Length: 466
Image 1 (spheres, rainbow, N blue to C red):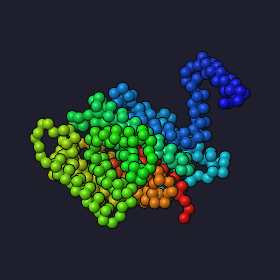
Image 2: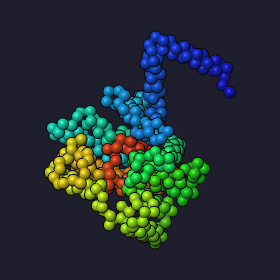
Image 3: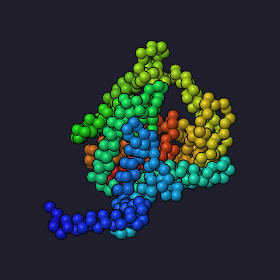
Image 4: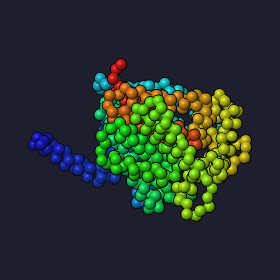
């Protein structure tokens, strides 16, 4: 029980706060009344960078850009609030400022996101080069647009820096993982509501759970973590076990072909890694998984005019090799790839610059935004030059290598399972981005990827000394 003096002080503070708010409302209006609360929030964020990180990632996961039935749109979360900065930008900067203030006021030294620092530095240099090339290209790129595009890449650098300084022990790593599992379970539920109620996005005349990559990436990571934890015999809460099949169904009903392929492949990889099997057993498991995947693709891809074929089967038919180029979207991607490669060949050392549209050299099946490329490696080279392409590959490789170190050396089995899930997630991301570019382009997924990179760096710092 709190002391009587403390209770009286809290009550008095509440009364004074109410009087001050009422007086400010009467004198300065709503904006003036809210200003002290905003100031208080700023002080809290500076004092507790953990709160800034939590609000940043939770808000990003929950705030969908479009309304989903009764669930309101979170589009305003991504609108500019101060100058050219959006709410995620402000939260990120407050969190980093809080880390600096903590370093100044205490003996807690800030940490770099090792062993990812070098790839992130290369990515930062490539981004600066891409901005400079874009400005000098005289392509009419607006400064504001260029700022936001560079911030999307910057999330991959700044969010890990904030995360690694917030998660400083094993308990914090577990809290982060539990929060991610809770958010993934919640997204699974809201996704099923969207699909079953017919209020989600449309894909080939069917209602999907989520078209945005962030929920699908989050749910995939969650599923991989549950599978790894179960195999490693890590005790999981009942709500996690209940949320896993919900997230799996929501991922299936997203109708995102690239995530389907990534899910099948990474589940096989995670099962092999988590089981600690070696030699012939590994070869047998991988062979069976590969055979089942090929057989399923061949069966699904067979031509059929049966009107009773399920929407899932119809969507899955497009995965088969024989169906490549059978629709305008696939044909556009092949046309786009040819044009992008020609643009890279014309500017091999600099790329064309961030935010600059690529030139059309060959006919296109459709018209789309020419500042984008569907293959991530090509987009990084095109927008940021060869240094950007190197940074992209180096960052993926470093994330995979760090995951391996953590699951092999960390003493906590739950952290090991999470590291295996991160390995599968980044492997799946590499597969997904063979057909679509999200990292550094789509801000929400970039924030999530930055959080996962920061978690890996924090777990690496938590490893016992050799």
